[in-house]
Image (cartoon, rainbow over all chains, first blue to last red; front, top):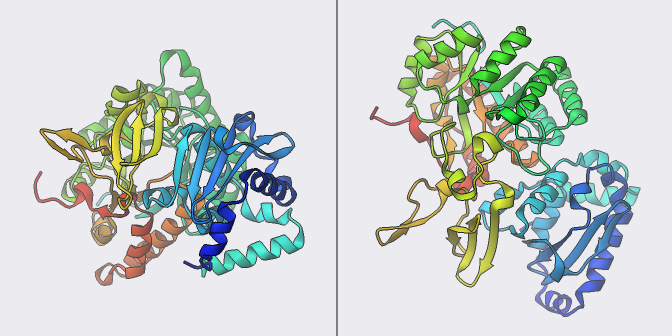
Length: 154
Length: 338
């Protein structure tokens, strides 16, 4: 493990937080940081459908919906498809350092629900040009992401 | 040996523009790709190329001396034949290096309409003898054949000695049940055939569910496998499922595993293999980058000095990591029986 392990007391604390604010905060963050670079992708197959991520080691779940103006929080229980993985594996996937199929073979990634919707999301994100995406981000965010990426590659 | 073409070209998969760039940047001699529909055998939601990414991909590859091959390797049906014809026309118009075909009707269309277009026989064409390859060459002028993964290397050598057609072999990636182009297993489960729908297990038919007994994989409602927490998983295809046969539950058809023929590279060079194909258009740019880099290094090493070729331990580590079932095999290439 290259990222520090999440302390048990912290994960227990987070697990007891209500999940709606987590979904809200994550979708807000994604819109602020990444939507400018992501909006050119063809999200139309995902309109009206919601998906969830379960961060297994943090005990956190978050639900999203995508529309023409970006991400919005959605109820985890109503998600059409749910991705489950550790925090580090989600970070590695988001930074395009890890192949989702490899994680799946090694039982580090689960996809439950509507598989076609899950594949659509996976393939959409695989189609993102990471450098072009980060070029559109605020400079401090870009710097942090690039440093994190270098650290995880090493 | 009849061939004067370069040997052991590295042909890598691209399911997206970033994957194509990863292949080009890490040393592929050629990339193969498909369009966003059932004209190719990796017809998955959100995967593959539209007009814009295709034009950009061809430009990116060609500027860096890398060839682009387009897979049109499914079998057209009468009511949608125009889609396949339009795809062939597009490939010709964009000037791809070659198109990879399985259907003889489509080959007839391609060689009649675009005589300058280079045709490769897809693995889905299932030609295993030089007589079969000769037929495709004589009738449609195919210049390269991708052999199904059923022949031993000695049998491959026999094909090469008796045919002027370039031979491409699979080097690495997911293995199938070895009746390429003729497999109807998934049609049995979900009514869609890989040869017409373009996927062995269409996403709409696949469901994974975590249960107290383990993770269950279902194909159109049929339970095809259940993994305990520690077990490696494979693709959700019927051929790689575990089934109860006479009181025993096991991989009755095929175990999830990847082909890795790297240790046979010196022999492949000697017998005159034109190109090595890496499987995995459904995989991410991260996979393409890793596998291309490793195979580029291996092919360069074997070409420098075939007698001194040995596999670096970190090559094997990297390939094992990304393998289905996290293990690999030489498949049929190395077997004493015929």
